[in-house]
Length: 207
Image (cartoon, rainbow, N blue to C red; front, side, top):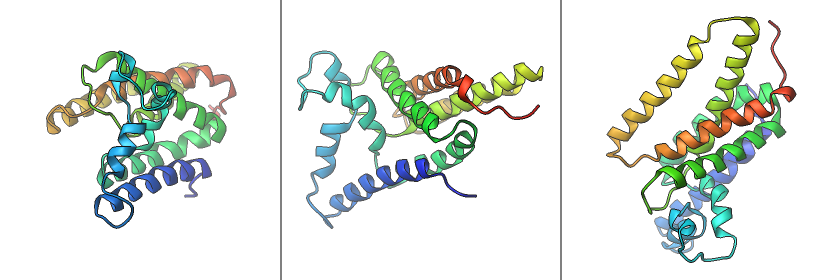
């Protein structure tokens, strides 16, 4: 299976950032405070939306994208990058690289909006999972659209949505509540809407 260039590019950015920060954490390069600096500059900070002073003028806007390229460690990164490849490959085949990137960016922004609206936490939020749930939302919309057009049962789509809800509930419990489910929800909704908006450009399978 050939990995698409857009997936390689997104993964390369995330991997380069996290490996650099992890190396700094271990004292191999730079300074141990690099991760703190990266989070201060690029994580999603809800406080910036309610009056906190930003470190630079555009930070309250940039963070809606930049948080998705930062991670909480190598294992967090690895899980998200594996998911990116699994979800991204068939979606790129379906909609093309440019439209895939549009959905990915929209989903990341949607994840930030979901976190801002629903989370009471002022802790920094990082990770690509909002964008990844957006990819799931986009794929499920395309499946739902195909099934309606071909008059096939819609239950498999709703079943997949239920599974995603249960997965979030389980992870939330296992992580002691330290799961940004609000980001996942916002990303999923944005991905669903993004796929619906770009539907007329998508290549439909033969039925």
